[in-house]
Each structure stands twice: as structure tokens, then as C-alpha cells.
Amino acid sequence: MENVKTECDKCGTCCEKGGPALHIEDRELLASGIIGLGDLVTIRRGEMVVQLDSGRPETTEVELIKLQGRDQQWCCRFLDPATRTCTIYEQRPQVCRLMKCWDPEEARQLAGKKLLSRFDLIPENDPLLPLIRLHDQQCALPDMVEIAAQLGQEGQRNRILAELKGMVEKDLLLRTFAIDQHQLSLPLELFYFGRPLFQLLQPLGVRVMETADGITLQYSDE
Ligand code: SF4
Image 1 (cartoon, rainbow, N blue to C red):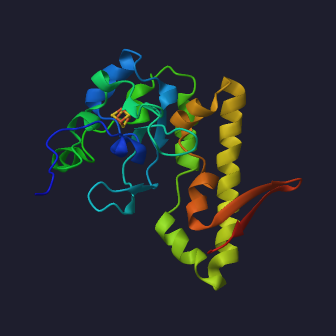
Image 2 (image 1 turned 90 degrees about the horizontal axis):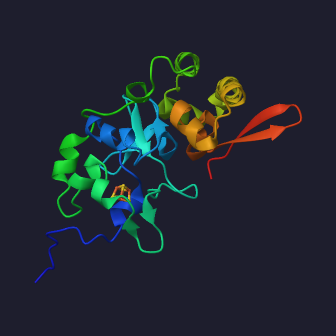
Image 3 (image 1 turned 120 degrees about the vertical axis):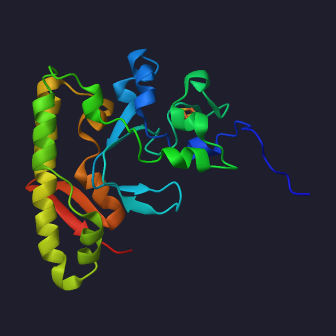
């Protein structure tokens, strides 16, 4: 007879796939300091996100706040690699409490609802707020699906790479200014400004390199 799971045996497999998006109910975890702003990464509107139901990446139409990964992987930073257990298990976020790998329906019901965004967590008098709003406005993400399609067409490629170069430069300029002015660490940059555009372009085959004359973009479909 097939061995059907009925309770979480804390194998860590779900956690290895990535930390959860946070919801309004998780605010208390931030207020109490169990989770800090440096533990979070903002997924900005327009980024590609793997969907819980289909397992396929789709563009998100709303902003999400997720727990950051570890060692440049998505594996949740609160998963202890040695014991494969959650280091905040008793106070884990709502999705983690609802997630049952053998029956993900309850967690799926929550997808896209009552999500936390940066603007729920950053006070109005935070001196970074005007820069974050400016970055959001000036560096809105391009349509990644459209970009991928255009990069695939040789006749469009140089034009789109030139446009992307301008966007990557503007994104980096505003981040660098914020980092210098506010002494932001990398984890805090990922919360306040999300992931840099050059990083989001890598899965589309675009490599951004720094040279003495600035940055260059190269495309490869391999
Ligand atoms: S917070 Fe804990 S339960 Fe949730 S994904 Fe991270 S390690 Fe797993």
C-alpha cells in the first residue's frame, strides 16, 4: 500500500525550494524581531515568479516580500543546513504553517491574498522612502516575457540590448546613490530596492559586464 503522508516530517524539502512570501498576519514576526528587514527580499511587480499551482514562472502583478535565500540559492535562510530543520519553526510564517506538501490546497488558497509589501513595513518618515518611490517610478521593470521574445529575434536584439543597457544603468545609479547615502548592506538593498535588473536578466540569457568604459550587455541563447 502507498505510504501517504498525513503530517509534516520536517524533511526540509519545501524550504529548500525557497522561503515563503509574507502576509499581513506575519507582521508580528517582524515587529518582534524574529525576522528582520535584512532577511527579506522584495520581488517587484513584473518579476517572474514560480507559481505554486503550475510550478511554472509567471510575471507577478503585485509586489511580494519573500524570505531571502542563502549562498545565492533560493533555499530559505532559516533552514539549518546541518540538521535540515527550521530555526524559527515555532514562529514560522503563515504559509509555512499552512503548507502541506501532500495537500498544498490550503497554502494555495492564500496565494496572492493579503500580501505584505515594502510599503506596509517602511515608516512614512523613513528617509529612504522618497528614493524607493523614485526608483519604483523611474526603474519600473520591463515586460520580461516580451523582452525574452524580442531577444530571440536576431533583427530586434541589438535594439533591445541597447534599451536594456540604459535601464540597467539607471537602476544601478539609483541603488549606488542609496547605498552611499544610507550605508545600505546588500541584504537591506534587496529589501528596499528588490533584486537589481542585471540579475533578473540573467535567466533570459543576458550577461552584464563591467568594463573601463561602463557596462556592456551580451546575449547568449545557450
Ligand atoms: S521559515 Fe522555516 S518552515 Fe518556512 S521555509 Fe523557512 S525554514 Fe522552512
